Every structure is written in structure tokens, then in C-alpha cells.
Length: 504
Image 1 (tube, one colour):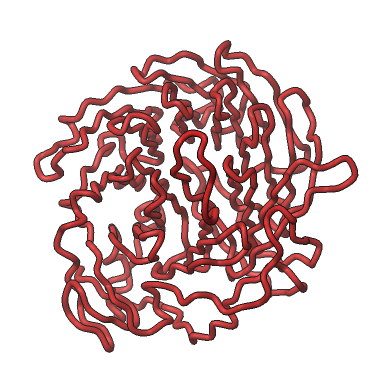
Image 2: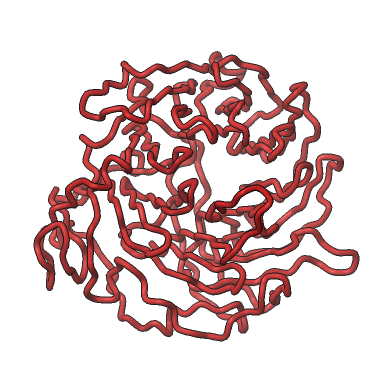
């Protein structure tokens, strides 16, 4: 990207000590900053996010996770701008390298590969329909036309009475890949089989369905609506098993931690534990100052991770309270902006085998960095820096070897172990040319989804449709041509300092 295009880029001073990561040992305070979020799903407005002050020292280490480390310098980040000279060898993904689907519906807001069938992709859009696409692994981007791909339509029309739209607002596959749940603007939730036949039409919400979560066994589906109501559905009968509300609090995240229990997080930083057998929380606990931006449960280590607008990641080794104690957390510090997404690295193991090595958690922040944490030792393994805009989403590949990060029309694929960039997909690299910047709807990355084997990445880009990138076919391709920057060499592989500049 040109350094003449009016883009402001923060240059790091290389002071590693300022970027060290420790468990919380003392209180700190920061000035409050406002973060204006893009419009919500299908036009539903989101609140302005505020960065709250750092919380005080209430959190202590849990013995089954490990004691907090003493302050130490981080490892130097890879492919970033603050370490000076870097070796760069990556593939720039062009439009010719992708298959784009969903444009006939005006764009794609959501996408999800089937967790079992690597050729089945679900997409959802604002025009009240979801699609099931059959996409062969050997599809050729140069010769494939989207209309030539087999797809089944799943409609949410007509909208319920009193609603103008039934646009898709959420979708998720069951763990066994046999059923797909979709939610819509008019509060409906529908369950479909892989032949796009509707099994249940579920409706108790008035507001848009913002999140859908299957439990691991697939017998319960949790729906969270913008009206503040959480409903657990029995997926065999289609009946509501239980509904939950917390007066005066907006629930923004939910996550199952067992077959019958789930955690919810609110806009005021509180965590709640629910059980489908009870209509009220089993306990409530203060977790963050400000909104909880993301929560993620790790079934392998039985640890719940939370990330907040206070820039802190917390690890809860046992989110259920004991008879005499409240749950406690280890706080991981290092981000300087709100934490907006978390993802656990998948574990590759045979049946009956035990986990070896660290459990790795990735966190993405508005500070434009991704941090890879060893949650056993509560230390940072690597800081990934290359994005020039606040992060929106991250996602590990199913084999855990890669992690994709997306923001503002730009997706970067990293090697998890080395931290090296392997692929860059930049749909909006000319967005700041001549001082013009497209609207957020034209550049937002709505969702990232990896195919079962980690060979293909689906990128839901709103009005730009869903781009499918076959990384395996590109890994031996010609690396990007790089425009020379200060202290850099021109060519696909060289040493660069500062920002990589790609030809528009």
C-alpha cells in the first residue's frame, strides 16, 4: 500500500518491555476511548463500544492452569513493522484465484462449511434466503461460473406479521453436520437437513436472532435475540425447553460448556451460568469492565476464555462456582484495545489419546494485533502484526496449522507455528487512493469459515458475496510482486522494513 495514500500507520518504537504480558499483579488505568462500531446485522444498530478502564486486582491464578508468569519481554513478533528487517514470502490472492458466490442475492453476510462434508457450504443473506452449495474440491476459479454450481435455497419468507424483513441474521451447523440452523430478522429460527428440507420452524423471539449455538450432542439449540431473550429449543420435538431473560441487561454472547449448561455475557461485563432445567442464572460474576466482546469454551482443557472492551483476556478453569467460593480467573494482559474475537486452536489427536503441549488461544483486538497464548503457562507465544485496521474476526483452520484474520476487506492467513504470513487477500487495497474510502458495508469481512481439511477458506464479504479461496492450489504459486519501500528489495521474496506495498 502506498505511503502516499493518506493512511496513518503507527510506527512501533521497539520497546519490548511496554509490550510484555503478565497475569494481573497490579491495577492500571487508561483513558477512556470510544469505538464506533459498524451497523449491526441487516441494519440493526450496534451500540457504540467504549473502552473502559482496566479492572483492579481481584483476579488470582488458578492452580490447574498455572501460576502467573513474572514480567518478561515478549518474543519479537513476526512479519510486523516494529522489528525492522523481515523475510517475506507469501502469495497474494487475486480475484482470479477465487470463486465468488451469492451475488445473485445481493451479497453474503454469513458462511459456514459443513464440519463433516468438505464440499458443502452454507451461506445466508439479507434477502431472506440461505443457500446450501455443493462445491467440488477441484473447482477451477478460471472456468467455474457460480450459476454452474449446485445449490439449494432455504427461504425464510414471508416475514412474520409486524416485520418488514426476514433477512438471515445467523446460521450454524450441528457438530455432526446433519442439520443447519438459520435465524432471521423477524425472530424466526429454522432447522434444516442437508437436503435443505425444513424440519422445524421455531418462533418465540420478537427481535432479530443474533446468535445460534448447538450443544455438542445436537439435542439442544440455543438462540439469542436482540430482544434480550435466550431460548433453548429441543431439536427433536421443536419445542422450547426453557427461555431466559435478565432485566436491564443486554446479553451479547452465549456459549455451551456442557450438554445442559451454558454461559452468557452481557454488555456490562458480567458472566452468567445457566442450566436448561432452571429459568434463572445459577450464578452471576463480574468478569470485565465494559462489554464482553467474545467468549470461547475449550472442551479439551475445560477452560472458558473471555475477552473484553477493557483489552484483557481471562481464563476461567472452572466457570462453575464451588460451595463456598466464586470462580476466579487468570487475566492475560497485552492488548491495548478491545478484544473482539477469541478462538482455540483445534487439537489433533486419536481417540483416547491425551493432549500434549500447550493449549493455544488466539485473541484479536482493535489494536490491530493477534496474540497467541499458551493458556497452561499464561504466557504469550507470539504477536502477529500486519493489519492496518482494527481486527474484526479470526479463525483457526480445522487442523490448527493456519489462522485467518479479517478486517476492512483484508484477510491474512498465517502459519500458526512460525507466525509467517502465507497468503493475503485484499479486496480493498485501493480504498484510500485519492483520499476516498468506501463505506464499511463495502469493505467489511463478515465471517470466515474453513473447510474440513483446511484447504479452502470461505470469506463472507457482504455486498461482495462469498469468496472461496483454495489455498492448497495457491501454495506453490508465484509470490506477490512487491513495490519497493524504504530499505526493501523488489520481488516476491526479499527483506523489507516498514510496510509491505502491493501493486494496486
